[in-house]
Length: 187
Image 1 (cartoon, rainbow, N blue to C red):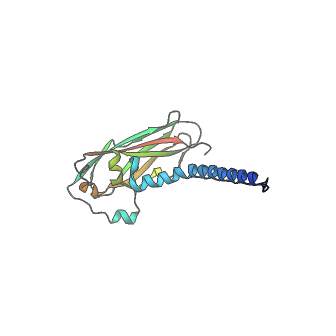
Image 2 (cartoon, rainbow, N blue to C red):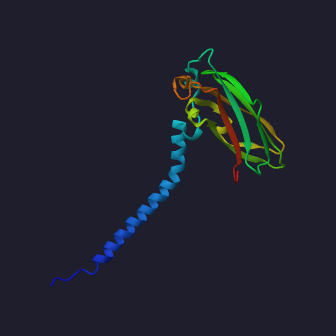
Image 3 (cartoon, one colour):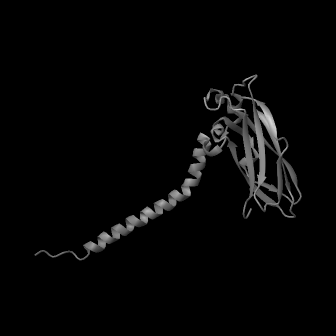
């Protein structure tokens, strides 16, 4: 009768343990990568109401659809407990589709200390997000307001003319752009 190698089960157990540890590390890595990957996916597709971004050069090449307009409504909010006032200067704008437009928001720090905030944003209806394109926006970076400071925050955008070719959205009359400012911990 042949003798069994006593270290064979230990080697097999080590291999299984190493494979399990490797899978656990891989899942942790995927967990950390999922947020930026999801953000990239949303920006590329407009999924979840995430507007598109365009460079100055890309915006300059967009065809303006003279006579074709759409209403854009603005919504502004702050995270509960954040000592800012934040509002759009205009509730709505009627824009020419394809024409770059500027909207202004006002922010005011009502506290006696500097507060840094970051804006989250979305477009509704969600399906319209892939046609709502921001060229420049305060929401691309964190904003720090000193005690009592008030600032104007611009957003430059356009509605992509391709919206007129979307059978589900070609008759859409209004898009809503909504922002919510959140405090940045430790900033």
